[in-house]
Image (tube, rainbow, N blue to C red; front, top):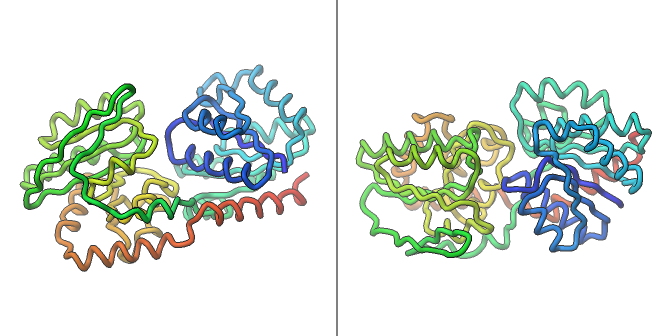
Length: 366
């Protein structure tokens, strides 16, 4: 099949990482894959892997609405005559589908929803059906909201089987060097926490900083390693100075799990999620997880596979106290349940399901 994957950008983020694996996997299975997006690290990686990546300014709030952008996209779809147009944001899916209708381009259109505010999904649900966009979603909650197929995100399970070791040092990666920060000896009521997330409001890093400040007043010392970057970084770094805790911003890392080896607890303090890859990767690597019960998180952690809390400062504080109260056997039971919960979450299974979607939609859309 000739497949084009269209998304806003290929920079940092779970949705971008998922598209990267999807594009590579489809390419390796013999499909001809083209990716259209704004620039980003995953675009560079895909080019290095031999895939065609076409840059369009789709991440800008205004540039992607310019007629010149849509004229170029129209010409690309007309010239290439793709079998499948697979879009990864709802607004882009709307415009792409309208463009196909107006241009009489063979329309076999798939949309994967990775996570959006509920009010946006309610507004888009009707026109997605009217325009005959085949809908997929990465979490059961999203799938139910827009009447979509639930296709679970995958995780590199084999890499996750690497033995979980206590690291004596962590690396803070910069462009030209890798200075190392030595971990202090642990004290009673002290934990090392890892967070892998984009530094944007919906990821709730501000909630975590307030929580660790409150915990410091209780005598609980927390060392936080944050792997990720984003527009909120400067503000969060400034706020971290008031926390009376050790907080290290590592920036974006191509493999954050090398750094996270020294963390004993992974935290996701998000206000909104689809089905976060960072959570799946933490579970695959044998890390206990504390996460807010938003989006597709509860089905992954309910029943004891992790600690679920409400997305608030009080919820995160309560979750840390709950983690500290666990016995070694309770922690082992949590990890065992987590391993069971993500068994079968391979990229091969994910690719099989998307290929089935493509096969189904090829004979049904006009």
